[in-house]
Length: 149
Ligand SMILES: [Fe+2]
Image (cartoon, rainbow, N blue to C red; front, side, top):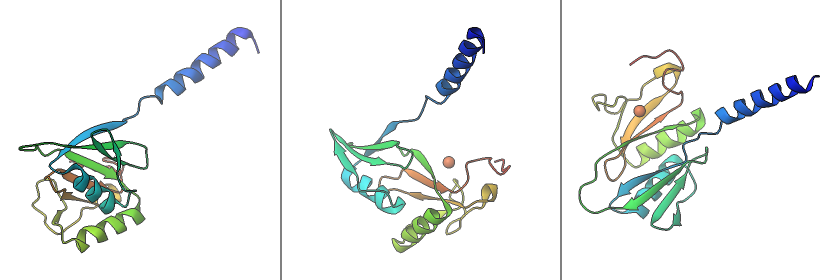
């Protein structure tokens, strides 16, 4: 192999690796009781208990993304957080949501109470955390099965 073509293939593979180097790492989620909210999320999703780091109660998902719960006073603007889970994890999460008698919906408008959806050939539903953050679990990424909103 010529040196030039070796260099070219090295550059190409570096570029390919480079494309894989941007990953969502963490976000801050405000809560009136960061410990309670982080524990709620970890328990319902079946993730390890939160760890404390500085002012944050940190829940880490299986793709190593940190959700950093932080105490906040006053009104909290609800945000939306969605989790892609396996079919068996969905079963456990759905069971825990029902055990806790939490309301859940098939749709983000919260019209279809007590139902789940089957978008993209998977399963999904929405529920609220203790501060009103709107949580969603899905077993297929949006659009992966051809679903269009
Ligand atoms: Fe969503």
